[in-house]
Length: 622
Figure: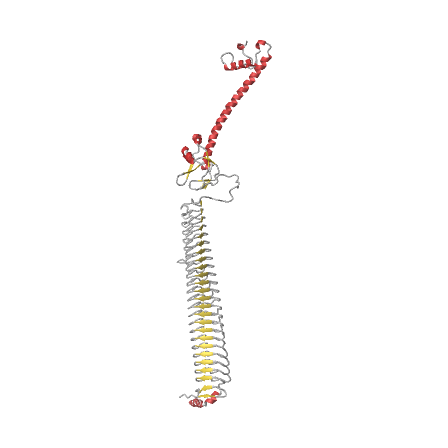
């Protein structure tokens, strides 16, 4: 039968419930112990101490302001003060430590000199011998010996910590295996579960950083950075963010499943649900938006240096590098394509393997798999598939292009044709005026004129024989221009407000003369005259007349020679006549001329011409 008593000592103001003494030899000794007066025992437990339980505060000498409730609570305490122990064996071996609070069986059981500790729960801080630790929960900080400034809340939280300091663990089994790691925070069931010696980690969420051994990691969310082993400097926020990371470093994941499958990839950043979800070892990628750079069924394994912003942008990336996607599903299907830039909703959406493309605008280069294309504007180059080296600027610019290459489209609705290749299109029929600097007043040597056809195509006239077939003389074809009627006129107000006088032809009249000399518009209406063709025909007519003039000049030259020959002969005749002394043979100049001409003009009537000496036949002598 257990007896108890309670007494109060006015000088020491101590209170003590009469405690049963324990003896290992005989019942007699036990009875003697029980029979001791309460006043005598009170004198042995110091000042202002409270003990309730067998062997509680059993060894106290000078310690004061202690409270021991429970079997063997604070039983070894001699000089320690301001301690509170509630529970069997709580603070059992405490000797000189102060300011400890132990609540629960075996709490702070082996503490000898550690002070300022708080232990609540079965065997919490059981092996502790250091100071300023707080353990709340079954076996919380159970093995701690030298670690200080630790806080463990939850069943078996930080149970294996030995010398780690300044750690905080909240949750069942949180920071369970830690021994020497310091400056860590674990909040959640099994958060930082296998961390042993790593430092400066923060894990908030069930099993966050569960397998961690690396330093400077932050995980917020269930299973965030779950399998991280030696990876350092990582930040994961969201359920399963960076879940499978092992050795990857300098990673940032914000959002559920962001960078979930990253293992060894480094320097990646993912913001949004599933962003970079399937990236494994790609490096220096940035994804912002739900499922941005997700990886799809292909898994981004080695893709690096990519940036994706927007829902499902770069969704199926596998190995492509150096891509930038900004917009809803921009570069969605890109797997191996590299160095592409897609800005806008569905920009470069279907691109899988195309490289070095730039698309800015909704659906720009939507179907592309070609190379080196640039599309700026809503649906610019939308239908292009395999064409390369194309440039389109403007609303729906190059919209109709299929697989052609080396095209340039500039202007709204310059849609082009599916089979275009090596073509430049600028503007549409809605434009009525064109101003281009650096042309007016700038002389270009060794140049040629530029022309435009009915479809608006610009070009020059090729004159080399290597571009021509069926070459033959123009002949009488050019005579058509002789029927043309040149006019002077002024353009209408809307075309020329200044009414400058003009000179030329009327296209409708030219068409009547020769339909091949006019140019028609896209509707087939006569628009203008082919003045370059008229000029060629003028040259032909000029040459024909020139040939006539040359023939006439040759005839005149021949006649001139004949006249000169006759004049020379006449001069000789005159000279001979003047030399004769016979008066009857002397003729006047007019008579000699008439006689000579008569001789020339009256064949058969004497000599036809004078002889070589200029003498006349005797037939004409008088």
